[in-house]
Amino acid sequence: EAWDKYEQAPGTPASRNELHRRAHDLKGLAPTYGYPLVGRICASLCKLTGDEHGEIQAPAKLLKAHVDAVKAAVVGKIMGADHPVGLALATELEAQTKVLIAQQS
Image (cartoon, rainbow, N blue to C red; front, side, top):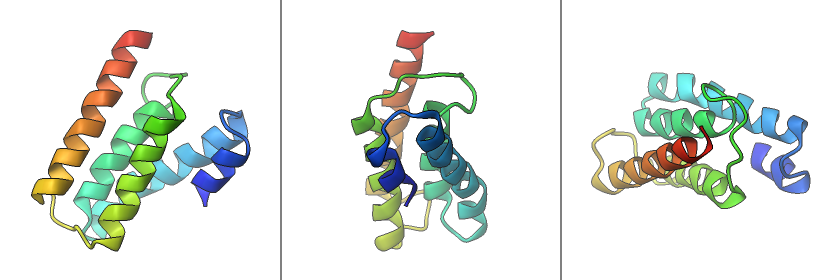
């Protein structure tokens, strides 16, 4: 739902804040419900939407990759933090996020 709002008004403060708020909620709640991988992916998404580094100009495709990874983990019931495909995906998303932050700092 938050992604749909973001796509309707890409990059606006309201759509970005909504995406961040949802990611932040999932970052904290997902591990509680047995989805630590979702929490990890959302932590990375939070970095892109303003959690730690302020205004990062993240490309929509990287934001969407995070959203799609969360959806895939939930639909696929990838609950363990050590799932090989999920772990590889989270690691790559984190790496891309780190590179982008370094470029914009």
